[in-house]
Image (tube, rainbow, N blue to C red; front, side, top):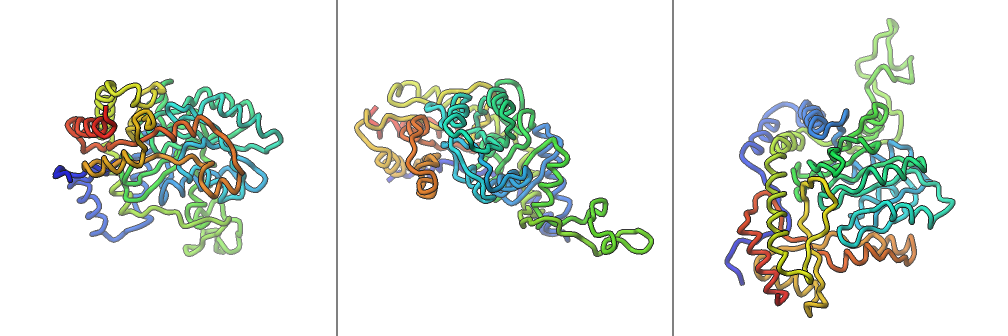
Length: 398
């Protein structure tokens, strides 16, 4: 067994100033629904260039809030790439909508224009309401192309940006600025570029959507007297708002993020430039070091732009190397190197198999067959990358 420190496939980076920011909130009088929440939302909106940011409990909650805000429900359908985490599709199921899966590029896992068009053509008569492109691994999907198709068919766009905070797309847009879609969704799970422990957010440039997102985030309750529906209950005889009064105007959820999380998030967000450059440099080094292992091992293809990488993925022809993925992962673990598979295609998950039947999406299946996520975090060094690639080559016999 190795004596070197274990390298997990992902890892957060928390510094003393992050701990101090959290401690300051915990020593204060407000732990939730306080000023740290608004401070994080303002900082995130400025960072990505959006008008509004609405923070919430996690990325799954953010996806759920986004479909709720659009009024999607039973009888509607949304389009989701098969190569993503289950939450991207599950959010539609939470509101009773159908999920139609699209195929993806087999070499980088991203939804393409032809994948979106093919999925819509294969399901005539569906009442499509939205498409949820995923910026997988940190790379931006082709949003100019996908948004052109969406607009032609009257579809809203919710971009799943959970992997891609800080990414600049090939057309120069910043992931999260909502230039191409109604809402962009983020996750701040510890595996992501910045960590809040758990946390998520939705960005939007639409005032009405931001209002609905905040309403659904907190039980459907509002204390904004300008929108009270019950005038007799909400105001005194002189027309002043009653100080205790609130209204539940719709069925919402407790999806709030607390001040403790948001204090950590704000501190981490200030380090995004440093984290982003570290991740970019490490992936550049991975690509250089993996080159001699081709064609049996190759990095994923680039979509253009300047990605802030959430994952460093290699595509491996296990059969050509005379091994299996499980054998490779176990052998690397014995060397102190953690790996992961991101993700099992949605149509291969038992829930969606039962829901959708047996369907074939060859691009997603080919990507899944070969993909392996190698260790990546802003705390790693180029020497760590050298160790990973050397270990991978040894395990594969290359």
